[in-house]
Image 1 (tube, rainbow, N blue to C red):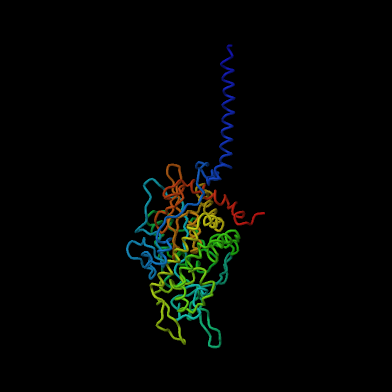
Image 2 (image 1 turned 180 degrees about the vertical axis):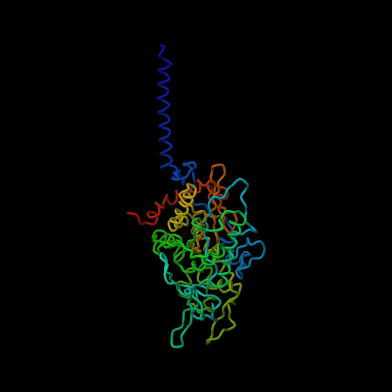
Length: 509
């Protein structure tokens, strides 16, 4: 029996090995099949030097209940919750919501990271700055003109690689001809609808200065010369280029031509412009232009307001674009107020009457617009997350890969600056499940900061220059969150390399 201990040890080793393999198999099956049913995943985070198995909650969580998403407040309230709609200048510490010029990263309010955290990568996305309204959002007959003679829109090509003959600095000069019998849509004058206004250009420049003052001046993170480490990206809408020129010059005053990254118009992920039938269908089933009772409730409550606005503006009561949401009236009225223009009056026999839209009516439009955005992107339940993930999943996957590439050293880019639209920022906030959803105003900004400490990576997300709070418990207050958690959340929703997005959009075979 002298071999009994050896035999016993051998049998125990085999049993232990079998049990470990069996337990590992159970864990793998649970991760693959059981836990996803409850909204949890354990995705592998490729190219990321942190723990690969991170549990994240992928399910939708309701936002906070506030005045913004309360229909009673939207219909019966007064003012607009202390929000600013009439100036780019915000009183106080600039943390207040200002539709004309939203809070953003700047030295005065910037929350510095604790000692020991080293900033490694920054990617930000912000809406363009203030502009004229879109032509589709103007009234059939506007009661006064709008002039933009204090700026020029430069649009020309220039030979590069190799260089050639240089172009002249030519800009658009809008005019109307006495021989042209047709009346332009909306405002007379010398503007494009839309275009970034002189005030919007100035705000763009200040935005760039503020960012550089923080990331170069305060933190010493950005280099004095951008080189290949700093990139700027725009959408195919010209107004983002108009903003970019001011931002780039404010940050670096380059003495040579500066490239702006842009994707093909048909698949642009930043705007976004790629085809996603499922996202469109989901939104139409509960939001704008839907027959959902939850959506129609606020439109029915707004009928007296609509009747008053239509009578003054000349918009027909059966105009679907103006009446499927408050968007058109919101854009029209807010653009005027941001540029210190009066609210419009009814035009009678070619002249202004004394029947004008009141500030109280404009405020109700703004409250309802805020309510709509909160409903569309957060309050309407899990379908808001589903639609947003499909519609903006490609950009989210690009963001995740940019973070990975910087951490792994595959990319030398330390700062990416994306200039986009309210729809872009809204989709991102929806995916992050922000706790209080608002309509992103002019210049609205979300920033992703990646830090390193003791060999670990962490992420902060700033919204309006302050720490973003998510309703999702896996994200919570996104302040030095392990970066692997955010990447696992993104991967679980859209897949590495946006591998899930074609299927989410209903495009896979």
